[in-house]
Length: 162
Image (cartoon, rainbow, N blue to C red; front, side):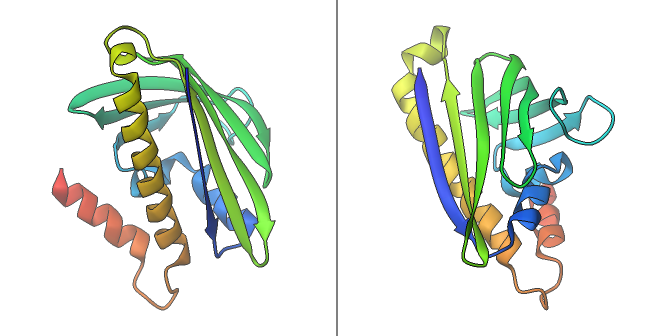
């Protein structure tokens, strides 16, 4: 089992960070390997909400589904895989830091089969990807409000690269 945890301080209030990271329609803006995300459960995000995702990772297309197992707005949330090649669980924890927010993302991966053989490499790549994703998130949320919409510009750029 591999445990991964990274934190970043974002110069935005907790409610803004919380809302952004829990909006599955925005996930592809800051998660570099995510190619598609579909909320499978109607209504607002809550315990029991299910989401299906498609990712490209290490040259493979990986499809997973996860379920929200904990949801305390502006404080913490947790998920666990309900389908996919790698069992995982993870979560977000948000804490105030001055006028900003410390976002801590944690996860546990329980690789099997081919993924188990390459678990040390897989874990290292996943840690780097998480660091990159958090840097993208910070850039998006801290962008000067006088700039043109940076989230839309990033989305356009990612569409062009596909």
